[in-house]
Each structure stands twice: as C-alpha cells, then as structure tokens.
Length: 345
Image 1: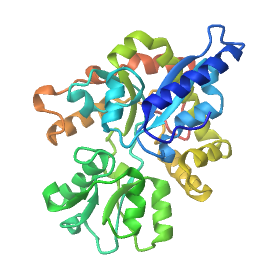
Image 2: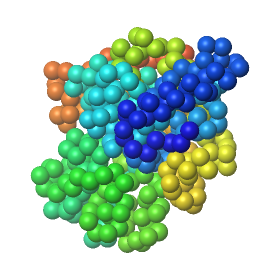
Image 3: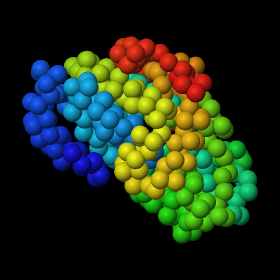
C-alpha cells in the first residue's frame, strides 16, 4: 500500500479498509483478521523524527500485532482536519497539553519523541535573539498558536520582545526550508535533516538556538487518542504502541535497515537522513520505553499556562493529560524496559 501524502482523511480511511479486506484474511496468525488503525502525522511530508509508524509498517511490526495501519500526514499538528479527526476518535496523533487544556477530551498514550529535535535557523545578519525584531519568521503548520509560531515566540522572549515585534509568515510546512533559502523568511524552526540541507545549499544560514538544549523539558511529540477511542479500542492502542516501541528500538540499533524507509517517507536524500539519524539517536529524541516523565510533563503544562496557551482556570494535572497504563502495558509487550545508548525514556 502506498503512503498517503495528502491530508484527506476520508480517502485514507477508504484505502485502509480496502487493504484490510484483502490482507487480513491472508494473515495466518491473525485468526480474527487485522484491526484497522489510522495514524495521523503532523507534517506533509514527514520529517525523519516522524517516521516511526512507517518503520513499524515496513518492517512488519504492525502485522505482528494484527494491525492494518493507515498513515495520514496533515498540514500541522494543530490543523482543523487533524483536530477534528482526533476528537471524533477516528485516529491517533500527537496530542498536546494545549489541546487538552483547550477542552479536547483526549489523553497522551505514548511519548514517541519526547525531546525537541529542531534548531532555530536564521539568515546571516541575525546574530542574537534581539536581531529578530522586525524580521520575517515562520508560522508554518498552524499559524498563530502553532509549533513554529511558539518557537519563534520563545526566541523573541529571550530579547524581551513580543510576537508583535516580528512578522510571522504562514505557509505550508514544506515551504519552511525553501522560504529560508529564497530569502522569504529570516528565521524558522528546522529539523536536523533540513538544517543539514539548508547549510549545504546556503552556507550563510546558521543555527541561532538548538531548541532541545535551550528547552530540555519541552515535551515534543506524544501519541494520543480521544477518551472515547481509549475506552472502546484500548487493546488495539496497546498493541499499536508496542509495535512502534519495537520500531524505535530498531531505529536505534540498525541504521542501515531503517534509513531507506526514512528516505522514502521523507523524500529526503541519504546524506541528510543519515545526518538526522545521527543527531536524533545521539540526543535520545525517540523513546525506547514509555517516553513519559512526570516532571517534564508538569514543566510543560506550567510553561503553557504561564505563556497563556492554557487558561489558568484550566490548569491540568499529569493524570488529566496522560494515560500511562497504555504505554506501560505496551512496553511489557515489547519485551520490557530497556536502555539504548544511555537513552531511558
């Protein structure tokens, strides 16, 4: 089955059901057939960090757990289409504290990439956060309130500036790197493979801040599901998280096996994907266990409240945001807790 490359959920679901009708009946060790699961990804095409479900699918790990997974990329984690599908229990995707704080009835169920992978990359004349004043910064993938906008806000705050002191430019996520190279943007949050490609194509670009170092407690990407989906499909969710935990462990241990899958999914060249793999595994960006850390989650919630992203009256507890039991059970199914390259989350 081909990857879905457009954020059209209805088409993706239909395709997944057609696939399941043929493949499920042929699975000898799945006497009840395969169960359908739709997985939303926040970027079109995905970045290397997002490729865990592709690895799980292409290595047969979803098949191992009798799951027919349909992967649907969207234009940003805060896109209306993704948010609607999440709330309706039609898929799993990245669930944030801000979503739940805004009233979404959902919980995080596995922290597949708990650490920030991106760097904030700027044009030559920007040397410090103060130089961002008056500049054109990316607000790709959700505009005001989206991830890129929030990262720009963090850098502006370092210089006692506000979002009104810069010009935020909304565009498609695929336009982040081309916009920076073409001079349409002055600053943008980029994933490691795009940092590599950007500096290769335009050597005057440089990293203003490595976001994972600047904000080590920021929680990046957590798979979550609607409360209704957790209640009705919990065994499926446990098995799916187990498959992807196994995929992440293969990612750390076998670069040569996973890089071709990542290249196909991301549509990026081998040198850039290998650079990203080195960076992401070195910095423990992918989870090898549950991906959850209560202290980090509580820091993230507090930060969102202080920034005004979560109303103070809707302040969350860890338990209101996370269903740890699903990830705990998935880790057991994947063989129990492990440590890989000193990565423990």
